[in-house]
Length: 117
Length: 113
Image 1 (cartoon, rainbow over the protein chains, first blue to last red):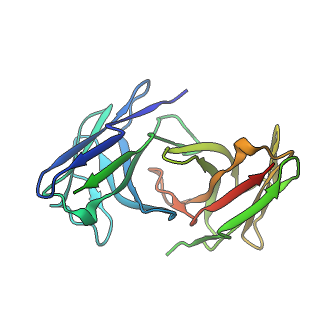
Image 2: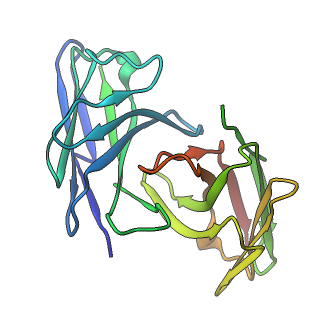
Image 3: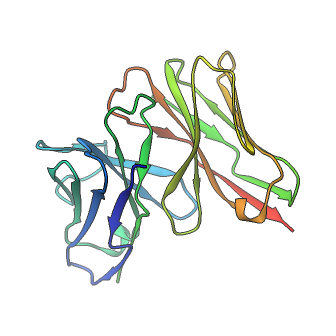
């Protein structure tokens, strides 16, 4: 079945540094990937839609200069949290939709826990 | 915009049935989904139902859809402690071809021995 790998699963960084999170579709090509943010005991908030070969589409209120998304290939999208601050600490989850999937099912990565000190 | 609502908590005894409810507002929803999230993990698709169906059963899981009332439910038969998790209802509207989902807040299911 469709598998999405997300890396790293946990990362701790100092305030002011940048952190990159990778999202890979292992056995399928994903022209579109989605990045979500989840606060403790809350639902998923869609941050942006990552499109292969073009600019990401950001949701309202999400700073595109803060959360850089690159989708350079059909199997890899990256989210870079630039100049991270403690308020950026969160659980980030990516997902992808495999082509030919008429039910529009999304496959999710395992998530990345970011802690900014 | 689209809205999906769920009750936040459900507590059941092991062996009983669990019913998690969800309501949505988008009348053009084509597919509705149930995802499960265990602590510190991503989301796992449990099942989904197309909007022209009323019911779908998959082993211990039964999904009921009342399109008129925009109500979706997930029934878990013979609930086990391993079923303890957060369950998310999600929908995708007919006009969205690239898979953008709207999620509910999630229902925390606690199963007591």
